[in-house]
Image (cartoon, chains in turn red, cyan):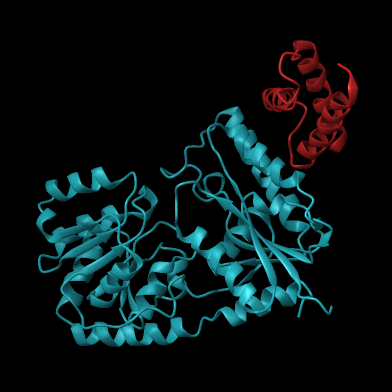
Length: 69
Length: 351
């Protein structure tokens, strides 16, 4: 993970996680949050995708969803 | 404001489908433009491969900041269907066509595939939350019928005002002499209950039926017609052009529509504008806001026998049907786009 594209992804994960929470998604909706995190992670440049990033985005989206409620 | 107001109509697209909702939002945009509004239509598809797609779609709308587009301020948005009203705008008006009905009034009926599974329960809760967030932050909520407004009050506790509009082909309908067929128009989905009319023919030996529409029920309906021995009295029209549809309305003896809890339903209004009486059921929903028994049509219990017997009785009473249709025409002619657009722009503070 490095560079502006990572910053953009993190911002997207934060913002969309917050919006998910606003729309009623809860931290317990693990599958939905994982699917969402995978969608965000899929924006990463091809070949750089890592499970670590997906896991990190998952935690970020989950935390954001919790915060919004 | 010296410049023309800028308004975006927010719509949900059903790819490869051209139903009433699609026609409605296009007409709404055109009617705004006709009145000098700089209006445009924003559409996103609602893809439903799995439950999360519903949330994903709401998130897509929520992610849009529509306050400004290309350095040009957007004065208002008019959202129409779930989940377009999740979009954010400080001057958001909602003109609700319908909610995601499978999660509400259609739940636990054959017309919904939602089960009591934990994920489906959570999806329904989340849909209700999306509706709460998207609708309560709107400056004003209109519904396209009293039926839709009543559902919104019942399931979500949200008040809205019914706002009617003419059907898509208003202005082009014409009356013709009563023909020798009852007309059924609509997508052949289970909840439209075209099967009631097919079965009703068994109780109305004098009647013929023309069914206009296509959809997943078509095969079953055709088989049913064979089994009931009424196939020879039904004509199936899968792909009518607008002119052909107008001709079919003009030449019908009456128009039959028997949906389960329709939102508004253009068919009765189209029938009335063609001077035709409407036969419908007591649980039809929106059509009952215009079809009054003995006044503009016939309203009977939702059973093949009740529909068939009403059809048989009415068949020989052409004079009565013409009078019902004439009154219906007067009622439908009172709906105008002027009133609808005035209400929408007034609510947005743009008049």
